Length: 198
Ligand code: AMP
Image (tube, rainbow, N blue to C red; front, side, top):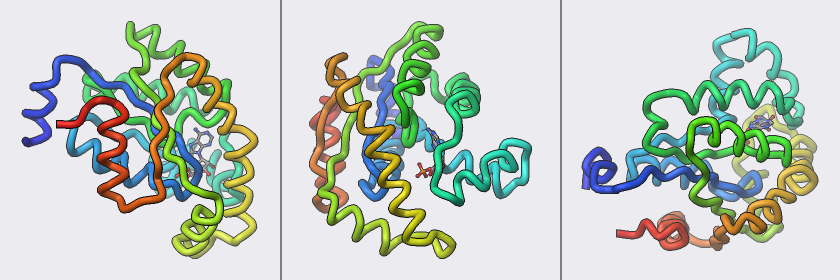
């Protein structure tokens, strides 16, 4: 079914967060599911990278933080995401890839959605064994990323983002999917986990 028809056939909007460490494949899955479900994949990493490329004020602010593998501050991220969620195309749902990344961001997202009279339908954690993550991230790393930067990203994920697993578990939103499989098998696993399989 074409994405538009599929969206029309689905009675409700679907607001999802994809959670997982760098190298878990969440960006790839967000793209595939976005086409399949007709809802936008919102990648904060992609948004920030285009801001850097365009040389905007935001780009100048975040460029060196990203190059070092650090996290952009919560306030800046809240502005970026709030504006994006107000776009018309996100009215029928969205797949968030790369946000939230801290507990404060998760609280902010909840508030933002509440103000729009909606809430998350689910959070999918794509789980991949650490050795495989390191193999994947080192082999696909961008030319200017040193091994040190890659390891810093993984460490920050463990410190700042992993606590979101418990946060969403408590809210009964968390679904865990095995990401250590072929791309198509992971996609099927996500569809099954959120009850969207055809
Ligand atoms: P990603 O493509 O999701 O790995 O994001 C690339 C980089 O953008 C990250 O390493 C961070 O520097 C920055 N970034 C993206 N999303 C966020 C976020 N939610 N909070 C803080 N920094 C972020």
